[in-house]
Image 1 (cartoon, rainbow, N blue to C red):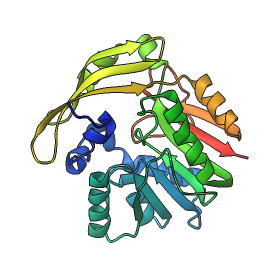
Image 2 (image 1 turned 120 degrees about the vertical axis):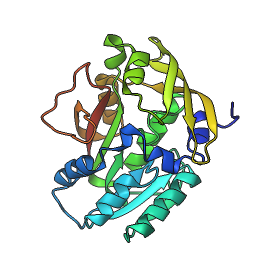
Image 3 (image 1 turned 90 degrees about the vertical axis):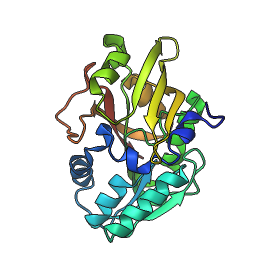
Length: 256
């Protein structure tokens, strides 16, 4: 076990393997949705929080948007820069902690997809800092678009069974899941193989949120309109109402 927080240990030497995970395969469709939300305005400046290997940043840059991607993992950022060079697109990739961003009203939209830092932190306060920093990075009237774990799902489903059914050969696996009803955190053991072929085991936990919590948090930060939908991999849609069948929720916040 590593002394680093699990989300830091996980993303060391994991860029190429990460890009093969099933949950990273919806980039095109997700960027289609983002473009619609931005009304195809290529003049907008976008911030991708927890950009990982840059899959959304790079795709949006290829479509003509000015994108800055930030992540805590230098390994993930190195892979992102490598991919951007290979695909001949310009994206500014910077190493920052999402709980302490240096930006102030600089971006027209902020995206945090597929985890993106939130809700991986050890405490609710840390998760809130991520939302607060993302909000501070937005210009007035800007839009925050993110996905997070749907707290309704584990009330109706066995999380460990869900991960087992989603498992594909050669990808990571979560086992020994234990969902705490008092904290809405799922504690689990993650097993995966890094890019160098080393097998690793980490103790992880993630926070699930119910829609009313997300709404209250964003209202606290000054959002005047909050919309929540079910998040389908690669097929985000305003037509998909959130239900307990959705593992993740898609949140769109409109800043005052």
